[in-house]
Length: 283
Image 1 (spheres, helix red, strand yellow):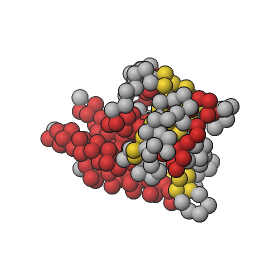
Image 2 (image 1 turned 90 degrees about the vertical axis):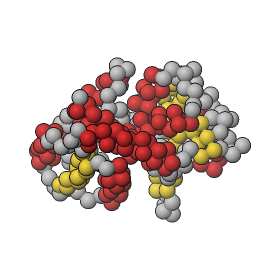
Image 3 (image 1 turned 90 degrees about the horizontal axis):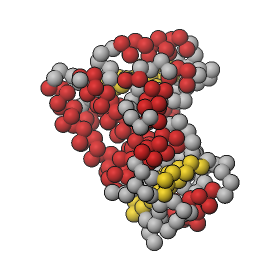
């Protein structure tokens, strides 16, 4: 069996195109959705991620701005900038690009982002809403994965799903979203004993642990659908996911590539969250 690729680039483009009429409707009311990104210090990977996000904003006709602070800035400087963006009516989404340089505490700093502008979906308000089954602004990567599942027409109700990874940004919210759609979900980690025992029973496998090749083809149920969230750089410079693509694609029915899979959908979901935040502000 050769798995069909789930093309995140194509799906993301369709999602962004679908957002344009909503943005036009806001523009007609004098509102231009705005995203503010905060970058602290010099991190090459962060610069690439932010550039991709700003490019996506421009593509759909949204306003965006990047605010930069030096690596040696104080936490007060950073939280003061966040508070000013919270008060800015032209800003509907505030994005704090991670990681932050030491000794800044990312979790503590992010608590200052207003829940209604937390388009990354990491605030306690938005995570709590997800737990309660009343999602507001959901974390972007799992939201993007759910959008991919819908695009592929996956029958989630009654499906068996395994999420490998327990992070607040991906694993936990992905599990909650799948549960809300009626799936039977098991959450594993890279420390799970006999991980293959769980993944071999799964119709859907989501892998997000940041470890190359943690899931291989012999650990999958034939015909499973696999979502690889990992982005890892190998010693030879190649980019790979958390799933061994060659062996997994010989067993799975559908699989996301790395790159060109979940990463593009994360950016598209961020834009969708910003538009949603602007619509809520507009009433």
